[in-house]
Length: 187
Image 1 (tube, rainbow, N blue to C red):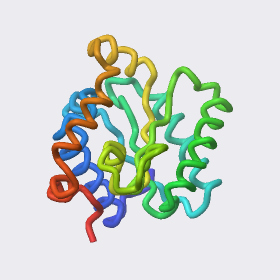
Image 2 (cartoon, rainbow, N blue to C red):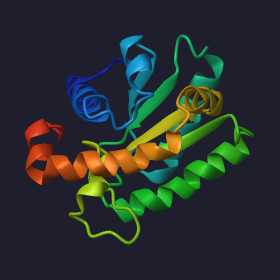
Image 3 (cartoon, one colour):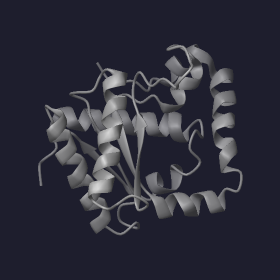
């Protein structure tokens, strides 16, 4: 197992700060708090310098998640600080992530969600506050267990309302409120 470098420790700390202040703090994902508190989120920092290397790391993280119990490792945040800074390039890589799930016969077992510093929903302007629901300090692939999603949705009967609630939350918060959260990468 690779030792975590001081730079990677900072990248993980930035991601945890974003998770605690924005995702959990603003309740953008009501399912995030429990695995965070229980220490069931695994943070991995990509060392890849190219798409093939990132693909290999994604495979490695999916296989490790499959090998672990949900009690030990509920989910994985694969942080990609060295590449895919352009949101469209990152978005294109998500097709590759889906292809990996197919190749590993893990469709329906896991899914890959995405977060990015420049995340932009279709038909929105780049500075639209609603985009911030999926903005993270670094490009990040969130590896989720489908059965965990199903359990969470069963426990939260109005799961389809989360998106609308998030929009309201961010519109009330505004750009200044988001900046005050200080959830970007450390300089």
